[in-house]
Amino acid sequence: MSTIFSKIIKGEIPCYKIAENDSFFAFLDIRPMTKGHVLVIPKHETDYLLDLDDQILSEMIVYSKKIAKAIQKAVPCKRIGLMVIGMEVPHAHIHLIPINAEKDMNLSNPRLKLSEDEFQQITKDITSELENI
Figure (tube, rainbow, N blue to C red):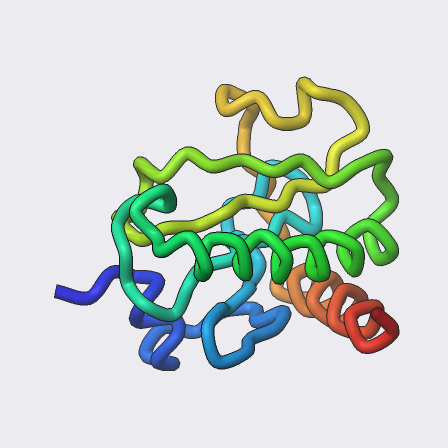
């Protein structure tokens, strides 16, 4: 059975897409830890990040770096935190989270509830910056 992420890639479930190429897909987390929280996933469904082929994993990190640079330009923050948990969806993924302090990545923090307009604006802001990278 396809994961929710595979369904997002196929367009069966809507998302706030940031970018995609032949191998990877990036989109806003709909339950973000902070504004601009993006998920980067491989298009090939693999449960655990460290089970990815070394070449794909390397390319995914480089792809995530490009997305992170765009997020950092679009969202006021000191850094982009990277988190790999891998328990919530059985599809490898990297969380890119704009942070100003380590506590911003605390999993016990309440998740933000953003409006449709806020999601759309964040998507526009990040994708605009991505064009310049």
